[in-house]
Amino acid sequence: MTEKGQHQFSNQSFRLTVLDNGLRVITTEMSEVQSASISLLIGVGSRHETDQYAGVSHFLEHIVFKGTNTRPEPKLISGAIEGVGGIINAETEQELTNYWCKVPANYVSQSLDLLLDMIRNSLIDENEVNKERDVIIDELAMTHDHPEYQVETLIDGMLWPSHPLSRDIGGTKETVCNITPAILKDHIEKYYSPLNTVISVAGNIHHDEILQQINSLTSDWIGANPPDYIPYLNNQHCSESKIKYRRTEQAYLSMALPAISIFHDDRDALGLLNVAIGEGMSSRLFIELRENRGLAYDIHSSLVHFQDCGAFTVRAGIEPRKVYDAAKIILEQLEAIKCGIELSEFNKARTMAAGRLMLRMEDSRSVASWFGIQEMLLNEIIDPQTAIYRLNSVTPEDVNRISKSVFEFTNLNIAVVGPCRSSKKLEQLVQN
Image (cartoon, one colour):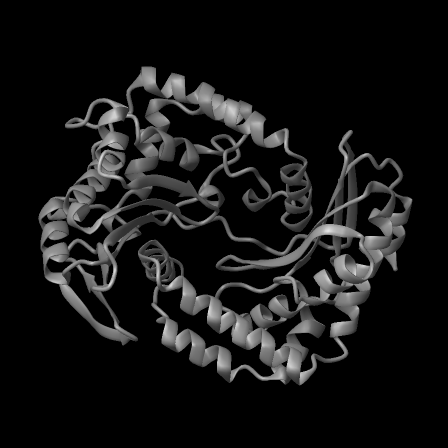
């Protein structure tokens, strides 16, 4: 194994070690807490999937909870964690799958054994696969019933047309029906490799004990490099708007623009711009649309960064007859900030971003996730102290530059789900 070094942040110390089989292990000792959290990350998500088997990563995430050779029943998996007061769950995203748990610190050893057993020794029983297929189809139907979800589906289709990023992470009813035990086993064979896995453990733990246990549990685990994700080739060529009629009390509005990747030098500058525009009750959008005009109860912006692309999105829930006025004002606010961010507003955004990061680092689950996801997606770890240093290195000129680049509006996307029928006003906004 290779020790990549020890790094200190406040009273926390993280260490990255690469085992002989290529498995990366990160430990963060937090002696002041009573918990321990584990994030076991696999570098596969929905953008690695073909159209025929869309949703296979999410399907497999469900199935590994259904039993292993030594724990043949689901209750023996969930009960092992919940029985000691802990939490266990998993999430499939576009570029990774995250199996995680948070337990009292003295149960971290049993939890590591359980998570590794799940991903390495899943039974993938045909009866369980067929039962879980129906559950996943119900899950897809449930999310499709929510207008907030539907509007994001419309936006994703415009941002990433004809690409896996435009699809539901869970796939469709048709593709889920295509997935068999053999397909799931093949997916494990391709992607569940130590070379494609990061284990991040944080909390009241001891590095040497964690490393020794993981090394013992995985010394016989070998695997090749997995296939790469399907690249995005920037195939959106013009602005677009869509309306989906639903008999709802509110109209759900989403406006999105293509942005930058996770590796871009201006990622921190765009992050501060996003804070100023739409994060929190003191942001420009919240003050103008809710406080000054009473047009929306909820209004906020957000960023997503993938390895080769990204997006900036504004979301709002609005009274249907006011949706077009709200969309116009949102665009005016985005246009206005291109004229320059005031120093006081810039300083507030920077302080807010740094403060939120500091607060996140008090929770062992957030710490495990922070270090693990960075190592998986960036192939390097930016510790919180360095992250705050980089935030403090951003200038107002950096924010102004990225605002002009991202808020170009040539690829503006607007989607509405609600009791609205005419799309002419939205089309005019997009064209103008």
